[in-house]
Image (cartoon, rainbow, N blue to C red; front, top):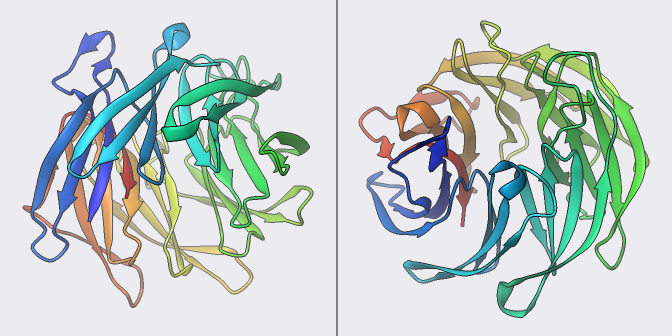
Length: 337
């Protein structure tokens, strides 16, 4: 199995030992990992994949960039770079011939053309949002994540600064139209999301309140169904959320105080039950589940390592595979190829 890792090359204005984006090969039987190649990019905090092309970003305030990287066997080759249409892009989705970016500091979603060969083209659309919350981190809209429904028709955008979720519809040209905005409770700070396989339920982890929320979607709007606590000890820094390929379990990472991953089981009606909590390495900002559902890879930023966990096929519980950490500087994103 191969995957890409985005890392921080500069944090708190200080350089790290990282080059940027890494291509890693993992033998899922022996759990031996090898770094095959890397591409030098500044602060590539997220990596999206489309065929043999990877798209990443330089999360650098008003000087942010977008990049395309060709995956050629065991090698990575940077093919194009362009100015980001928004400040501090933090999440990307690549579909068809379009790249969609969530721009944190600009509070916007942008649509960028992907030209032949995977190079980045013109900005086709920008949507800015103006909602804001009440905490010091919510003085303006901050778009954090884009979640595409299984049909590809809908895109949910989380607005951490506005304490809301925006539901957008993709037309046949890949452009976005706002359908509705759903508010969540004050100072929760929506962060990362995932749809169920039918596109009828959306799950959200909230960064500021360390909670997991469940929403129903009727194709026009999102309706809040349930809120559960994810953190064992509040840290106001929840990071990531993913659904197991079986659809039976939801996992959410929390950071800053009592770092770990919370496990939830999914009921027949799509609502969740909190089942367990697992301590991880420091700052689990992002994680990924292998397509076969047997392994969870956790990017522990401040441990400078990716931790491996075995997932039980019976109940979704996690077992830390001690001694099999993949050492890498400041990992913050894992994208499985």
